[in-house]
Length: 196
Image (tube, rainbow, N blue to C red; front, side, top):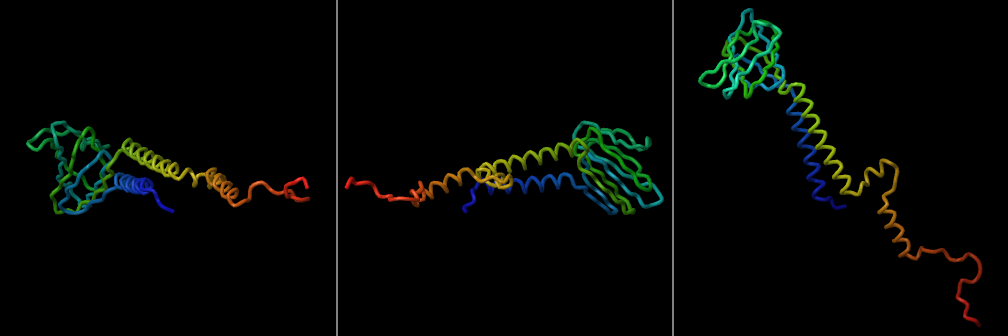
């Protein structure tokens, strides 16, 4: 059976969108003494194993200020404009600290310290996760419908326990062509009456 080009393209599209969705949603992890990584709209969990706070900064591109949001009021605040765009400097406390960025774009965290920090970064917030999952589902369902339609819904019909109508018509046509059409009378002489 020859596979149609459109089905191959749809299959590749499904694999690509699943990979994109997984890559967009998976949590990124970083560790080291000189950390520098990008932050999306999701939560950032930092671990400072030392007994002292560590100096860190958030840098954003553009002129639009951003805010660091944290349950601890002394860590929350807004960025200020500097030569590189927007800057927010803070002291990362000891232990585990979680924060998010509001109204930011292209934000990066950096800390140059002798302490090996650890970071877990969720790229998307709840709204972004939902939008990504919806986009992935729409593309997959659309590709599957196209593939099913291209094969005249043979796979769906088999799942439903139905035969393909086109195959039934072909089977009947083949039977008629082989002389298996109308049955002969079972009794008597089937020859035409010549009047003799």
